[in-house]
Length: 94
Image (cartoon, rainbow, N blue to C red; front, side):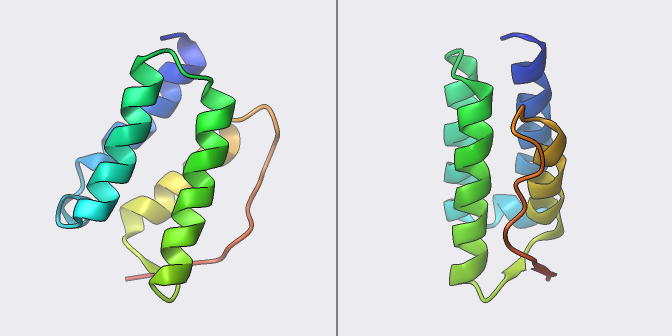
């Protein structure tokens, strides 16, 4: 992995370790899938965009209530893309 892929991977890994994330098979699978894509040298800009989209979709399905670790991951991704801030959805932290 290159430097920016490693930074994204570390943020995903940090969120993945959270107890609330571990309690949700849906979130565990989502984050693990993106971490695996990065390990396979996936394009980190594309992965960040897809991850933020999936987090937004998760938030909408759960009435905008998300674990703090997921909220933090979403906002940590703002600085990890060459496309700038792509915030679209506000969250309520559980």
